[in-house]
Length: 284
Image (cartoon, rainbow, N blue to C red):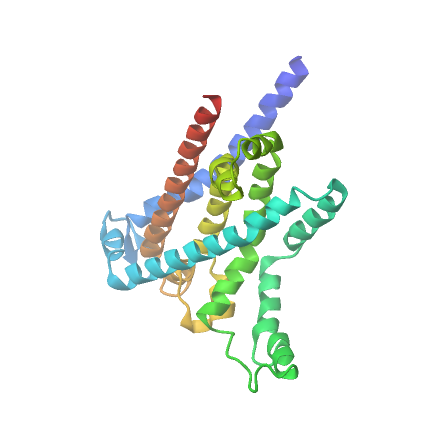
């Protein structure tokens, strides 16, 4: 028993040390930097100011934030619409086949998302695979301008983040008791009513978890707009990166990062509250 207690304390201590050093302190430094003044030579000056947060109300930044929020929201909704039927059917196929389908979903995680984004460049460019196939079949007579457009950025977000929506939905739908669905049908409910009143509420935690896992990275991903959108696409992730690496305005970039972190915290709290309500309703 003493060995188990010692091992437990050791593991907890290592995890606590790791989180403190590599999560808490870096985020604390970002928060502190956001309240400092910009210095063109030393990057920051030890002088308290709210200038960076005031600059966040600039129309240019507000437009970038709204555009990033809209793209992330649309990508999340598309991933949800595509993933829910797939996850539902995945839970209904035989277990042997289900394993192979799950492997196909997980395979993209075996390769760097940056490499997969470069593969999309090869697919979508003017002389790429997609245009070549369309020209060969006579659907188009000249190559389409797909790469370096908002559509290409949107496709990249959906392609990269789709597995993050499928897996939480699969975990939630797999726990769904089929006897509840059969009971609803026995009581005379139609398919639409069963889905909206039984299946959808019982799988709501998976929906919310999947939406958070897709929406938050979609706000911060910067390499997808860079590679697929070119200089035409400026989203929140690109803006924060440019403030640190190009403009050398560390306080402004830190303030934008703090706002993004706050949005993440609000969404996680909303997920916690919804999960708590769901558990309370199930217990009732």
